[in-house]
Each structure stands twice: as structure tokens, then as C-alpha cells.
Image: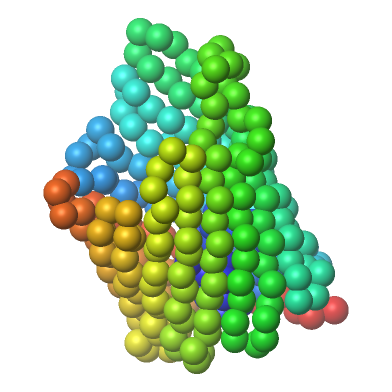
Length: 243
């Protein structure tokens, strides 16, 4: 959600658009765990680090989902650059799949993104995932799905942020994810909520920040499959000093 806001950017934001790395104001790191529909076999774990370097930014991500007999994992390295009102970014991913009895397979994927600062409160962007290539090493007829996204974010105030993202994944219907984040208590209590239209799944989360650490609990609801609980931990470094 924070990819389209300068105020709410954190270490997971670049996963939505790598160009947000060019707008980082401080180093941050985080871990996230989710148990989809309450099933251990569908657990997902993620870890990220994002660091500003002058007007650029670097991000590292690791993801794992599944269980011992079937799982998918990914390691990614991202870079973003601020060019004024325009920011651009790119990420290279190494994707791995393990299926018991069939062995392992892997594919290299690429993501590119751009953000355009319309004014001080409105940001729009485009994000492309695996637009070309992405074929698996041992099964060349299989490839990573291409995903095309357009997003926008609006900082209503220092306490309220609204965002929406339109996604078209290869072979899937169009999905819209809309949400908001509200700072109920400055630098302490955060609330976020939204909905994913493809599955009519609402979600809600609440976070508490203490010094440079933040913990969020979240819940996503699927009308047929039930609840997916999640836990997010974030750690922040010092604010970047302007040259």
C-alpha cells in the first residue's frame, strides 16, 4: 500500500512497485507471516530490507509459501532511482518450486516499475511483473505468469492515506485492491482496511509502534474459504539527512 505514498513507505512497499525505493527516507526491515484460511499447509512467510542510498534505494526480499511436500520460494534484489517527479525501479527474482516426488525447478523473473508524483499529495504508477521470459529451467513450456498493474495513492493528510491498484494477471480476471491507512494516534497507533474485488475479500489490520519498532496484526476474509490471519513486524533506522 505504501508504494504510492511518500509518508507511509516502508520495507515492504517496493514489492508493490520498485520505484518507491527512490523515495525512501530511512532504512527499514520487516518480516511477515500469514496462514491462509487457517491452514498450515498454506502458510506464507516474507522478509524484506530497504535502504536509501543518496537519491537511489536498494531492496532485498525473500518469500516462502507451502509445506514440505510442495512449496514455492523467491529471492529478489531490487533497485530504485528518484529522477525528480519521476521514479523508476527494477527487480530481479530467482523463483524456486519443490514438489515431492518430482524434484525442484527454478525460473528467473523480472519486475519493473515507475511512479509519477502528480503533486504533493497524489502519486500514480505502473508495475510490470514478468512481462517477458520467466520460463522454468526443467520445464521450458511452463513460465511465470505475467502481471500488469496500475496504481494510485492520495495522501489526504498526514494521518490518512488512500490507495487503489488495478491488476491484470495472465489467465485471471481483472482485480482491484482498494484500501486506506489511518494514523489514529501519531507515531503510535495505525489502522488499515481495504478490499480485493476478485474474491470479494475484505481485510483489516491494526498496528502499534514503539520507538523504531512496529507490530501489525491483520485479518483477511474470503466468503467461501474463511479467515487468513497475519502478523507484520517492522524495524526502522534513522531518518536520512538531506545533502
